[in-house]
Image: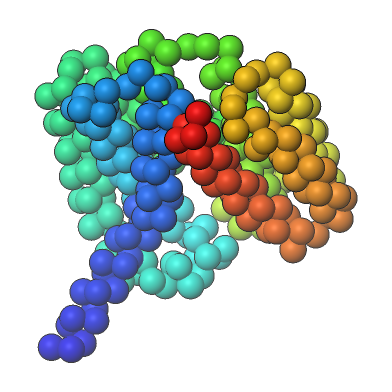
Length: 288
């Protein structure tokens, strides 16, 4: 009985890892902060906005499962411990839960509006197509991953018809950050990607050119942060962009040493800095 309970517990952990539970928690927090502290005209009692966020999270969770299904061999190479944990749940169950989450998301979105339903049909299709095909195509994989990452935020903007110069600049800044992070991820998984036939920038053009590309993207993000700081009134959130310039200068120094250890450190630092940015939005929204 004890062994059965432990086995079920490990299967549950495997499922949580498959849906990328920590990423889901962060995305939930980010989507609500973005919605209620950036688009300040939102009515908290609007059922549709909660429904859109919930459907986004279900679609993203399903995307994590289908990505796990296609990337099983890759995970065995670059994430062996995680792969062993996920082995407690058979591949067919990942597919079952993938279908359940997508159907749940589409059912709720159809109840909310046929336009919202079409929006999530498109989103779910491209999540599947990315895992099935696009993730192996040079540069298309990176751009698709980033666009799919910001798609839920774009959906909220479309729903509220909220488009400003400030939102465009913030989106461009986030795009550069996410693109840099995804290319660094390719640097870290280069050996596994090459063995499995993926076409990534580090494999096709080499580590040195890829490192220079990442530096160029982050330098562009630094100049954009300076432009936002000097041209946009973002309240307390402006301090974040001032600190970003210093932060990116430190990151660019780390990237001068082309080692896996440094790439891993930069990857973690960029993730932390995005989290700091969300906290900054929250604080600015509360006190301004």
